[in-house]
Length: 122
Image 1 (cartoon, rainbow, N blue to C red):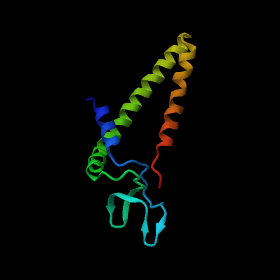
Image 2: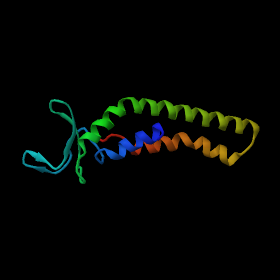
Image 3: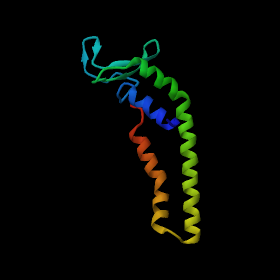
Image 4: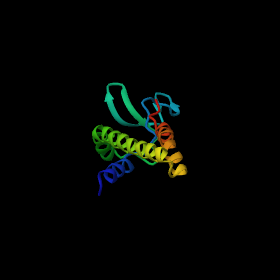
């Protein structure tokens, strides 16, 4: 299993999302229909509707892994984006593969769109 596959497996084993930093579910008196995924500090937590149940042991592993995996994924993505940008520049300078070059130049915007769609909801 590659490191990327390990990270993906940990994410898929964790309680389903979206996870939020505020309770947004329906209120039932003093209670909410959201479950706490993790307690960060007194009165501060991470919540989810958890329609399919919660998986605390998997959440614990995922949260611990995320602390080092997210920066590593950012580094890997920045490296890949730099490589894509360099290839696009060479293609453009040489006037080769114009359609591929156009797609390569659109990659940063597509990556931002993907990241925006997965942002933490507060």
